[in-house]
Image (cartoon, rainbow, N blue to C red; front, side, top):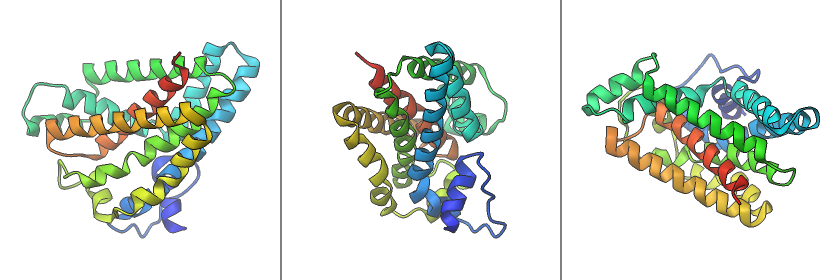
Length: 240
């Protein structure tokens, strides 16, 4: 259960303390539990959405659900998204892009990326129906599973969260971790399967783009993957 506790401690603001005897590679060894963590995040967000829809107009309910969603993760993945928008989209050398991504300050590309993703998520949540709202569960779980295939890519920098993940990651985790998002997608029917495929495709494109711009992946890229996949899955659920 140590790695399950690590997964919750890393990925959420829920009261799970990280162990004091942290070992190199623990974030990678805990990654098999990431989809389960996503399911819990999605479940709490869905409950918030359900309750807010009973009290407020859809748009306000969607924003409230999104606030809880972000609060549950401490904005971890949004930070990665902003850093990647700043670094990957700029015209510069690989070394300069990595420097920009490491800089804690947020630039124009990062702000624009955050605004667009948050706007899309809020409006998508506001557009969900009682049936399609279960797409929240798939979005949160699948997005965290999509981090796992990044373990096949080279590291863009030899240190940081990406390096710790790679040192403990095992390829078999991809198959064990897929059980939860795959089950959710199947239970949600055709729309669930289509949104799952769309999310995986979006993650693949994100990884390809990161590799083409910085030669591999970093912890920030993991965060961008989560945000992109969650957004795409939600959009598929509200598409006509």
